[in-house]
Length: 124
Image (cartoon, rainbow, N blue to C red; front, side, top):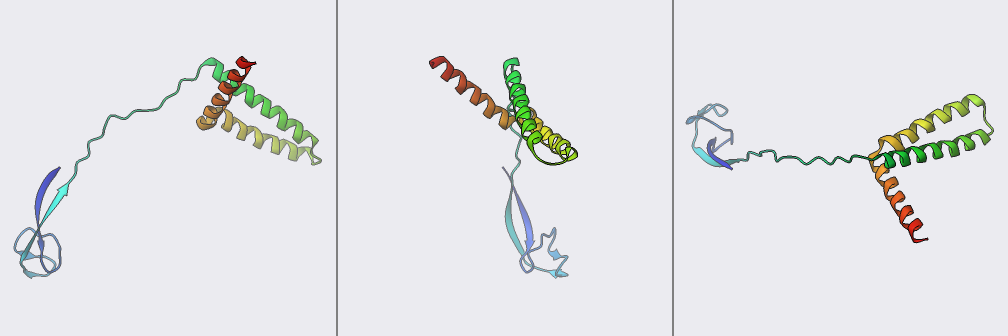
């Protein structure tokens, strides 16, 4: 920390450089205040990067395709016009793509779920 003394006007509290205060337009008594300037130096940042293997990406794509097929079956059953079915399918596909392929938090959940499945399969 670097410590520096600054002079302030005792009447109005504005910083001044001489006995004459610019705000009060007269000579005023000095008020000394110590101002601590903190210089923060950036620490080397640690970035959290996960390199997914081929098996993880295959799992994400498998979940994505499975969910698409389930939702396409549900959309096909709905008694609405085909144009609305296409619109709903496009929206759901975009959302599931974002969720399964682009969202890292959901990918972590899927990877954890896959690990739990593998553990239970090994026990059987």
